[in-house]
Amino acid sequence: MTGEAVVRLLAPGDEPHVEALLAQHPDSSLFLRRNLAAGGVVDREARYHGSWVGAFERDRLVAVAQHTRFGTVLVQAPAHVGAIAALAALASGRAVSGVVGPWTQVRAARAARGFDGLPMRVESHEGLYALSLDALVVPETLTSGRWRCRRASRDDLDVLVDWRVAYNVEANHEPDDPQVRAWSCEEIETGLAERTGFVLEADGDPVAYQQFNAALPDVVQVGGVWTPPALRSRGYARAVVAGSLLVARAEGVPRSVLFTGEDNVPAQRAYAALGFRRVGDWGLLFLATPTRLEA
Image (cartoon, rainbow, N blue to C red; front, side, top):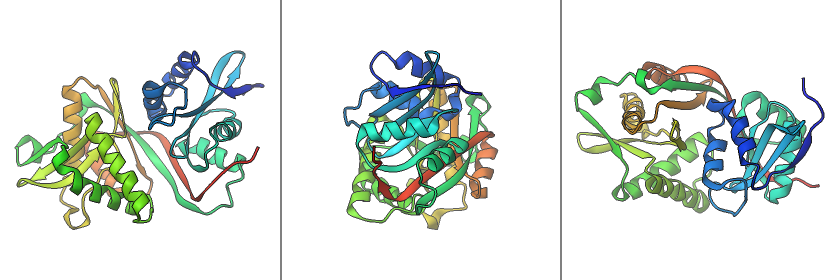
Protein backbone atom coordinates (compact mmCIF):
# COMPACT_ATOMS: atom_id res chain seq x y z
CA MET A 1 0.00 0.00 0.00
CA THR A 2 1.29 3.48 -0.83
CA GLY A 3 0.51 6.79 0.79
CA GLU A 4 0.39 10.37 -0.39
CA ALA A 5 3.56 11.38 -2.16
CA VAL A 6 5.53 14.51 -2.92
CA VAL A 7 6.40 14.34 -6.63
CA ARG A 8 9.15 16.69 -7.74
CA LEU A 9 12.04 17.26 -10.10
CA LEU A 10 15.25 15.85 -8.67
CA ALA A 11 18.32 18.02 -8.17
CA PRO A 12 21.98 17.65 -7.18
CA GLY A 13 22.06 16.18 -3.69
CA ASP A 14 19.26 13.71 -4.45
CA GLU A 15 21.63 11.12 -5.91
CA PRO A 16 21.95 9.08 -2.68
CA HIS A 17 18.16 8.73 -2.56
CA VAL A 18 18.15 7.42 -6.13
CA GLU A 19 21.03 5.04 -5.48
CA ALA A 20 19.25 3.62 -2.44
CA LEU A 21 16.03 3.02 -4.37
CA LEU A 22 17.75 1.43 -7.38
CA ALA A 23 19.80 -0.81 -5.10
CA GLN A 24 16.54 -2.44 -4.03
CA HIS A 25 15.86 -3.43 -7.66
CA PRO A 26 19.33 -4.18 -9.07
CA ASP A 27 18.40 -6.39 -12.01
CA SER A 28 15.70 -4.06 -13.38
CA SER A 29 17.50 -0.74 -12.92
CA LEU A 30 20.58 -1.02 -15.10
CA PHE A 31 19.77 1.80 -17.53
CA LEU A 32 18.92 4.16 -14.68
CA ARG A 33 21.98 3.13 -12.65
CA ARG A 34 24.24 3.64 -15.68
CA ASN A 35 22.72 7.06 -16.45
CA LEU A 36 22.94 8.17 -12.83
CA ALA A 37 26.61 7.18 -12.66
CA ALA A 38 27.37 8.97 -15.93
CA GLY A 39 25.52 12.22 -15.45
CA GLY A 40 23.87 12.50 -12.06
CA VAL A 41 20.38 14.01 -12.04
CA VAL A 42 21.18 17.16 -14.05
CA ASP A 43 20.07 17.36 -17.70
CA ARG A 44 22.85 18.76 -19.87
CA GLU A 45 21.66 17.23 -23.15
CA ALA A 46 24.52 14.69 -23.16
CA ARG A 47 24.03 11.03 -24.12
CA TYR A 48 23.05 9.62 -20.72
CA HIS A 49 21.45 12.75 -19.32
CA GLY A 50 17.78 13.56 -18.90
CA SER A 51 15.17 15.03 -16.59
CA TRP A 52 14.79 13.07 -13.35
CA VAL A 53 11.65 13.05 -11.21
CA GLY A 54 10.99 11.24 -7.94
CA ALA A 55 8.07 10.46 -5.66
CA PHE A 56 8.78 10.77 -1.94
CA GLU A 57 6.71 9.28 0.86
CA ARG A 58 7.68 10.56 4.31
CA ASP A 59 10.95 11.87 2.83
CA ARG A 60 11.83 8.46 1.38
CA LEU A 61 12.19 8.09 -2.38
CA VAL A 62 9.84 5.33 -3.54
CA ALA A 63 9.77 5.86 -7.31
CA VAL A 64 11.93 7.46 -9.98
CA ALA A 65 11.69 8.24 -13.70
CA GLN A 66 14.10 9.76 -16.18
CA HIS A 67 13.07 11.26 -19.51
CA THR A 68 16.19 10.80 -21.60
CA ARG A 69 17.72 12.77 -24.40
CA PHE A 70 16.30 10.17 -26.83
CA GLY A 71 12.73 10.66 -25.64
CA THR A 72 12.47 7.39 -23.72
CA VAL A 73 11.02 7.48 -20.22
CA LEU A 74 12.90 5.03 -17.98
CA VAL A 75 11.02 3.98 -14.85
CA GLN A 76 11.67 2.24 -11.58
CA ALA A 77 8.36 3.05 -9.97
CA PRO A 78 6.53 0.46 -7.90
CA ALA A 79 4.14 3.36 -7.11
CA HIS A 80 3.13 6.73 -8.62
CA VAL A 81 4.45 5.79 -12.06
CA GLY A 82 1.97 7.89 -14.04
CA ALA A 83 2.66 11.06 -12.07
CA ILE A 84 6.44 10.85 -12.19
CA ALA A 85 6.58 9.81 -15.87
CA ALA A 86 4.40 12.78 -16.81
CA LEU A 87 6.38 15.32 -14.80
CA ALA A 88 9.69 14.02 -16.18
CA ALA A 89 8.40 14.47 -19.75
CA LEU A 90 7.01 17.94 -19.01
CA ALA A 91 10.24 19.01 -17.32
CA SER A 92 12.42 17.88 -20.20
CA GLY A 93 10.27 19.54 -22.86
CA ARG A 94 10.99 16.64 -25.19
CA ALA A 95 8.47 14.47 -26.95
CA VAL A 96 7.88 11.03 -25.44
CA SER A 97 9.11 8.27 -27.75
CA GLY A 98 8.45 5.37 -25.39
CA VAL A 99 8.56 3.88 -21.91
CA VAL A 100 11.04 1.24 -20.73
CA GLY A 101 11.19 -0.61 -17.42
CA PRO A 102 9.50 -3.40 -15.46
CA TRP A 103 6.54 -4.67 -17.48
CA THR A 104 3.71 -3.81 -15.08
CA GLN A 105 5.12 -0.31 -14.56
CA VAL A 106 5.46 0.32 -18.28
CA ARG A 107 1.85 -0.70 -18.87
CA ALA A 108 0.66 1.45 -15.97
CA ALA A 109 2.58 4.48 -17.25
CA ARG A 110 1.08 4.07 -20.72
CA ALA A 111 -2.45 3.84 -19.34
CA ALA A 112 -1.98 6.77 -16.99
CA ARG A 113 -0.77 9.06 -19.77
CA GLY A 114 -3.56 8.14 -22.19
CA PHE A 115 -1.29 6.34 -24.65
CA ASP A 116 -3.31 3.10 -24.72
CA GLY A 117 -5.04 3.94 -27.97
CA LEU A 118 -2.01 5.26 -29.82
CA PRO A 119 -0.19 3.21 -32.50
CA MET A 120 2.97 1.55 -31.22
CA ARG A 121 6.20 0.92 -33.13
CA VAL A 122 7.28 -1.63 -30.51
CA GLU A 123 5.18 -3.23 -27.79
CA SER A 124 7.13 -6.06 -26.25
CA HIS A 125 6.72 -8.03 -23.03
CA GLU A 126 10.23 -9.35 -22.34
CA GLY A 127 11.69 -11.84 -19.94
CA LEU A 128 14.42 -10.48 -17.65
CA TYR A 129 17.31 -12.92 -17.13
CA ALA A 130 20.38 -12.89 -14.87
CA LEU A 131 23.58 -14.91 -14.49
CA SER A 132 26.37 -15.04 -11.93
CA LEU A 133 29.41 -15.06 -14.21
CA ASP A 134 31.19 -17.73 -12.22
CA ALA A 135 28.43 -20.06 -13.51
CA LEU A 136 28.83 -19.05 -17.18
CA VAL A 137 28.71 -22.09 -19.51
CA VAL A 138 31.24 -21.41 -22.27
CA PRO A 139 30.62 -22.96 -25.73
CA GLU A 140 33.23 -25.44 -26.94
CA THR A 141 33.75 -23.32 -30.06
CA LEU A 142 35.35 -20.69 -27.85
CA THR A 143 37.24 -22.93 -25.44
CA SER A 144 38.78 -24.82 -28.38
CA GLY A 145 39.86 -21.62 -30.10
CA ARG A 146 37.86 -22.36 -33.27
CA TRP A 147 36.09 -19.04 -32.88
CA ARG A 148 37.47 -15.88 -31.31
CA CYS A 149 35.65 -13.09 -29.51
CA ARG A 150 37.42 -9.75 -29.23
CA ARG A 151 36.64 -6.15 -28.47
CA ALA A 152 35.49 -4.16 -31.48
CA SER A 153 37.94 -1.68 -33.00
CA ARG A 154 37.67 1.30 -35.33
CA ASP A 155 38.61 -0.99 -38.21
CA ASP A 156 35.19 -2.62 -37.70
CA LEU A 157 33.25 0.65 -37.81
CA ASP A 158 31.74 0.50 -41.30
CA VAL A 159 30.61 -3.11 -40.96
CA LEU A 160 29.21 -2.59 -37.49
CA VAL A 161 27.25 0.53 -38.41
CA ASP A 162 25.62 -1.42 -41.26
CA TRP A 163 24.83 -4.23 -38.84
CA ARG A 164 23.44 -1.79 -36.26
CA VAL A 165 21.16 -0.22 -38.83
CA ALA A 166 19.93 -3.70 -39.78
CA TYR A 167 19.39 -4.50 -36.09
CA ASN A 168 17.38 -1.32 -35.53
CA VAL A 169 15.25 -2.01 -38.60
CA GLU A 170 14.56 -5.65 -37.63
CA ALA A 171 14.35 -5.49 -33.84
CA ASN A 172 13.13 -1.94 -33.26
CA HIS A 173 11.04 -1.51 -36.43
CA GLU A 174 12.88 1.66 -37.36
CA PRO A 175 13.03 2.93 -40.95
CA ASP A 176 16.32 2.62 -42.81
CA ASP A 177 16.82 6.36 -43.19
CA PRO A 178 19.63 8.89 -42.56
CA GLN A 179 18.47 9.66 -39.01
CA VAL A 180 18.50 5.99 -37.97
CA ARG A 181 21.89 5.57 -39.63
CA ALA A 182 23.22 8.54 -37.64
CA TRP A 183 21.83 7.12 -34.39
CA SER A 184 23.28 3.71 -35.25
CA CYS A 185 26.68 5.24 -35.90
CA GLU A 186 26.52 7.06 -32.56
CA GLU A 187 25.67 3.79 -30.79
CA ILE A 188 28.63 1.98 -32.33
CA GLU A 189 30.96 4.93 -31.71
CA THR A 190 29.85 4.89 -28.07
CA GLY A 191 30.63 1.19 -27.84
CA LEU A 192 34.10 1.79 -29.23
CA ALA A 193 34.76 4.68 -26.84
CA GLU A 194 33.47 2.79 -23.80
CA ARG A 195 34.97 -0.56 -24.90
CA THR A 196 31.61 -2.29 -24.58
CA GLY A 197 31.32 -3.73 -28.12
CA PHE A 198 32.47 -7.24 -29.07
CA VAL A 199 32.96 -9.02 -32.39
CA LEU A 200 32.95 -12.77 -32.93
CA GLU A 201 35.27 -14.06 -35.63
CA ALA A 202 35.05 -17.42 -37.40
CA ASP A 203 37.89 -18.27 -39.78
CA GLY A 204 39.07 -14.68 -39.40
CA ASP A 205 35.78 -13.15 -40.54
CA PRO A 206 33.38 -11.13 -38.36
CA VAL A 207 30.15 -13.10 -37.95
CA ALA A 208 28.33 -11.58 -34.93
CA TYR A 209 28.31 -8.56 -32.65
CA GLN A 210 27.22 -7.73 -29.11
CA GLN A 211 27.38 -4.45 -27.22
CA PHE A 212 26.70 -4.07 -23.51
CA ASN A 213 23.97 -1.44 -23.24
CA ALA A 214 24.85 -0.81 -19.60
CA ALA A 215 28.15 -1.58 -17.90
CA LEU A 216 28.92 -1.00 -14.24
CA PRO A 217 31.63 -2.43 -11.99
CA ASP A 218 29.24 -5.01 -10.53
CA VAL A 219 27.13 -5.93 -13.57
CA VAL A 220 26.92 -5.76 -17.36
CA GLN A 221 23.73 -5.84 -19.39
CA VAL A 222 23.85 -7.69 -22.70
CA GLY A 223 22.19 -5.90 -25.60
CA GLY A 224 22.03 -5.47 -29.35
CA VAL A 225 23.09 -9.02 -30.18
CA TRP A 226 23.26 -9.30 -33.97
CA THR A 227 24.10 -12.00 -36.47
CA PRO A 228 23.44 -11.29 -40.17
CA PRO A 229 20.48 -13.38 -41.39
CA ALA A 230 22.61 -15.49 -43.75
CA LEU A 231 24.84 -16.58 -40.83
CA ARG A 232 22.18 -17.52 -38.29
CA SER A 233 21.48 -20.89 -36.64
CA ARG A 234 25.19 -21.66 -36.27
CA GLY A 235 25.66 -20.67 -32.62
CA TYR A 236 27.36 -17.35 -33.36
CA ALA A 237 25.05 -15.22 -31.21
CA ARG A 238 25.48 -17.46 -28.18
CA ALA A 239 29.26 -17.45 -28.67
CA VAL A 240 29.60 -13.67 -28.97
CA VAL A 241 27.61 -13.20 -25.77
CA ALA A 242 29.71 -15.82 -23.97
CA GLY A 243 32.93 -14.30 -25.27
CA SER A 244 32.01 -10.82 -24.11
CA LEU A 245 31.06 -12.15 -20.68
CA LEU A 246 34.37 -13.98 -20.39
CA VAL A 247 36.12 -10.64 -20.87
CA ALA A 248 33.84 -8.96 -18.31
CA ARG A 249 34.47 -11.77 -15.81
CA ALA A 250 38.23 -11.52 -16.31
CA GLU A 251 37.97 -7.80 -15.53
CA GLY A 252 36.22 -8.49 -12.24
CA VAL A 253 32.54 -8.09 -13.13
CA PRO A 254 30.55 -10.74 -11.19
CA ARG A 255 27.09 -10.61 -12.83
CA SER A 256 25.20 -10.11 -16.06
CA VAL A 257 21.60 -9.26 -16.94
CA LEU A 258 19.69 -9.29 -20.23
CA PHE A 259 16.15 -9.20 -21.57
CA THR A 260 14.58 -10.87 -24.56
CA GLY A 261 11.10 -11.14 -26.02
CA GLU A 262 8.54 -13.62 -24.70
CA ASP A 263 8.13 -15.00 -28.23
CA ASN A 264 11.87 -15.20 -29.02
CA VAL A 265 12.27 -18.87 -28.16
CA PRO A 266 15.62 -19.37 -29.97
CA ALA A 267 17.20 -16.55 -27.97
CA GLN A 268 15.73 -17.88 -24.73
CA ARG A 269 17.27 -21.29 -25.43
CA ALA A 270 20.63 -19.77 -26.32
CA TYR A 271 20.77 -17.75 -23.11
CA ALA A 272 19.60 -20.69 -21.00
CA ALA A 273 22.46 -22.73 -22.48
CA LEU A 274 24.88 -20.10 -21.17
CA GLY A 275 23.36 -20.37 -17.68
CA PHE A 276 20.96 -17.41 -17.60
CA ARG A 277 17.79 -17.87 -15.54
CA ARG A 278 14.66 -15.76 -15.58
CA VAL A 279 14.31 -13.31 -12.71
CA GLY A 280 11.50 -11.02 -13.83
CA ASP A 281 9.54 -9.25 -16.56
CA TRP A 282 10.61 -6.32 -18.68
CA GLY A 283 8.72 -4.01 -21.00
CA LEU A 284 9.53 -2.02 -24.13
CA LEU A 285 6.91 0.37 -25.48
CA PHE A 286 7.76 2.76 -28.31
CA LEU A 287 5.22 5.02 -29.95
CA ALA A 288 4.89 5.04 -33.72
CA THR A 289 4.99 8.86 -33.49
CA PRO A 290 6.69 10.60 -30.55
CA THR A 291 4.14 12.63 -28.59
CA ARG A 292 4.69 15.78 -26.55
CA LEU A 293 2.75 16.03 -23.28
CA GLU A 294 0.79 19.18 -22.49
CA ALA A 295 0.73 20.66 -18.99
